[in-house]
Length: 635
Image (spheres, helix red, strand yellow):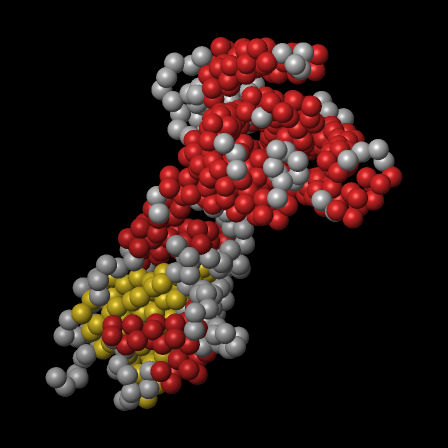
């Protein structure tokens, strides 16, 4: 169903139900009894706009004709009712100075509550003033009770519109066809309408006084009615020149107001229940010199006085709490729009949000000052983080360069011909590491074979490894004895070693004509030897690590390469799994059972270690180097 049809149909049906139910239950006319339907007029206009005003007026017209009012009086009454409904609607969307956000009717702060009460009071006075005159024009015989009828109209209208208004505004949060006006493009004459509204209010006061003193002057009443009707409809037809916001209802002030209004509503309902109790009214009639209508009015007035005594001071207290506590907290919540992930908080933009509370000596002032300090600290922290991130990126870039440099220092490809095969593989735990291997011809007959492991990880270990590689190449130019190279290398590393770093190293010289590998060891892992299908560790002197003791004599040994020699760093055997178990030398030996020392097997070894680790982080760099001998082997 189209929203406009709903906005007409719902007020129409509500008016029909409330109006006729009251009539058939109490049977009152001429403002003699309870008439709650009167309060629906401004509320349906307030919630559903012009369509709601039309719907409620059509419903009331039908009900008035059923009640027995003349068509002429019904027409006059409904014209005024239409103006009153539109007035309530236009007053809510008036651009009042202290109304920060203009939205659909909500009782979410004291200003909106005061505005709602002002609308109810103004429309109540207008409705009752017009209708007591209309009753006189069409039923002159009621002149003796005209003042009482006007008071009855006012009491009914005021109390019922207050009740229906609170209930209607609460319900409106959960329905989707409340009328939200669009901003008019017409020229803004807000000042003129302000003046018109003030004239209307002043006129009501003046006319009320005039009616009291000149109640028997029909001509005056006609002039007053025409004048008020002109003011009413000129204002009721004013364009809406403000932007209406669809605000969320989840605010603390609204929850506070809901509790307050619920208590107020209970007082009003209590007054209605008491005034409609016929036993109580009859009892009071017998005790007091008043008739039933006068007693009912007296009860209503008494309950309204109690309500005023409770309501007005409470509203002042709520206004104070809202101004001193709630509004600052709501203002502080605006800080969210200035916070963006990864960026500094725009402290300059927050000055208007909480600076006015910085000098406050209450908890609000403490909170505002805490915000200021927190923002300053947060901005400093974000600045530090950005500096750290910048430094981190710089380091990452340098590490990438260092990684490329270290990789460039390793042999690019294997050496393979019909007499021998040499190849290696290295996988650092970090971007760079202390493991390295090298192999290259040193003359027409011999090939250098080197594997090492500098202490520690990362850049320091990589620097020691690169320096060691460079020194070894220089030493091989004048010396081919591995033990003597280790002797010279060790002394050079010991000369300037402020960080006390050391390195394990295994150096071999392979003779490609004889297949013999001459070697010397500086604290490195024992190689694996493959001989006739058997895998065993090479028995050799372990020596000491380089860089800790000068003038150490390293032992030299030699071995026939047979089917192959596998050199490795401790990162192969020392990797752990989730159960804190080492891969170990035994598992390494078992892996190579019935396997050749070649590139394919090395990749299988690394994969086997990673499966064994089962997702655990690498503990150390992993490096493997193999030498195979093809001399005198059958094709």
